[in-house]
Length: 254
Image (tube, rainbow, N blue to C red; front, side, top):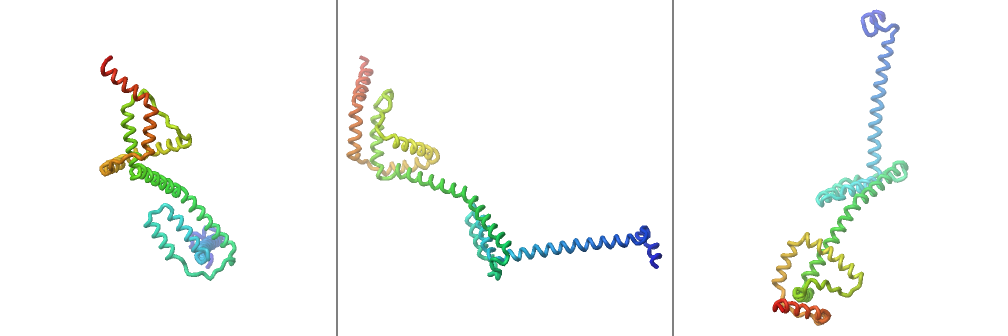
């Protein structure tokens, strides 16, 4: 009967002594082994995921991950992430620390890596925020220094000095005012910052200045300012006299 089966089966009849049967059985065994290993791998992966979710440090891990996602996110997205973090905490686990030292080490290391990553992401955003805050503060101080009420006297003094300067020839050069070199550097830095901000906000500042000048009232200079102005005029009196004499001579042609 076996010989008849071999004769009628082309696969088996081509191999003597039942070699085809043994080969087919080996192939079936290999397929079953691969399927068993795949099933075992899936079961192992599911088991590891379950252990991670039930670990006491899992809420800390989720919180660290959400903090990384919140860096640079819009306020609405950040609030949504916080809500997700509150709603997705698993129930209290019965697993205690120390039951699986290898898993404990993995969870602690992963949390530490996420914290470091969050700090690296936050650094450029914090620097940008600090820079913008400083610029806003400088702009606020500049506006207060230019348009506040206590500066009215300084504006009036600047107007009077400007009128006197128009009467002087440009060939006389600049008059150096005594001062501390450090204060000069500070004034130069403030002047550079003022010029930069004026270029950017010139339109807005011009409208504010026009509105301010409409409401400003004429006031006398303080005593100290008047004394400083008189002292400057006294020290430059020779230049002023020379200017008047030159103008009168050019007018008469003599």
